[in-house]
Image (cartoon, rainbow, N blue to C red; front, side):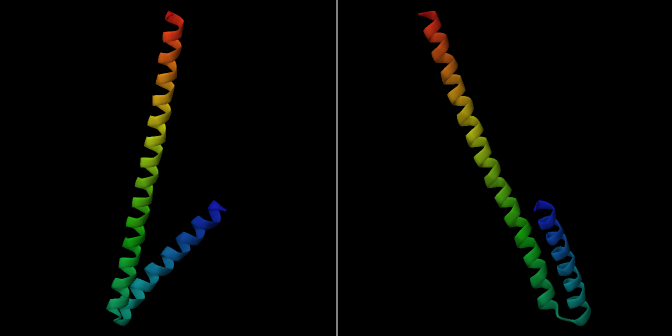
Length: 81
């Protein structure tokens, strides 16, 4: 499924790039700039999505580490008594 989605994404990107070139060639500058804006918006959106995903991973990893440290302290405290 992932390979198919990557292929669809690449084909769509190539078609949009060809559309940008064709729009500039035929003089439809506003459509060309609109397609460029679309590519930039998608790229920035994917960047924000990756940033949120990284933040969630960092929070989860930090929480797991905190719980593990608390468990270790509790075990050491029980062994000392």
